[in-house]
Image (tube, rainbow, N blue to C red; front, side, top):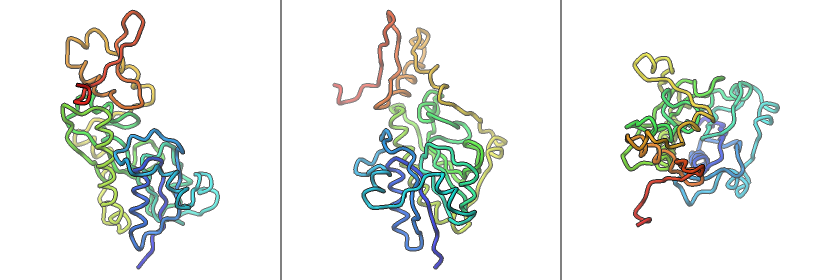
Length: 260
């Protein structure tokens, strides 16, 4: 049985779960991990899982930097890279080290929600469908061929936080299903252009794009935009949506049963 050499890139518990999955398959060999952030803001839905850096340290898993990979290994040395919400740009020198490429878990549906803060934008754009996308990494940002859109329904009670958590679960469940198919060359892909041609919108959001949405203005009180903004930015550890009154921010969030 052929042994596949795998590297996992990530920071959050979702990456730890992928590491555990890789280690559970007899012909998968985890060569090591690349930790993007040693102290990430952890809002993953798995409270019993360590973040990847802590898990790797506890179990003596080899940790690489991107530079160490590109400087010490040759093209196609590894079989597959798995990027689990990894926060750094992976350049061609590293991509070329993997004969099957590097597959990425993007936190929004592509091509509609490229870039950052996809869980917030899915609510701000009043989408009925949320999810993440598993795609190959290429030299662009969120432009590689798509293996699967991992979709779920967005309810009227969802917030940016719950959409994020649902996305993590959807990405994990779909990734562990796809990994064997990727290694066996039995997976089908679509290009971004193919999705655009059948009607999907193409959007990209940078780190500053979100700022114009967070403030609640008077017109929002006359429409349903108010509730969408409040829901979109209801996310622990981050600034909620706000209304400015007499020069001060009044923060708003969605109430829960615990608040009553």
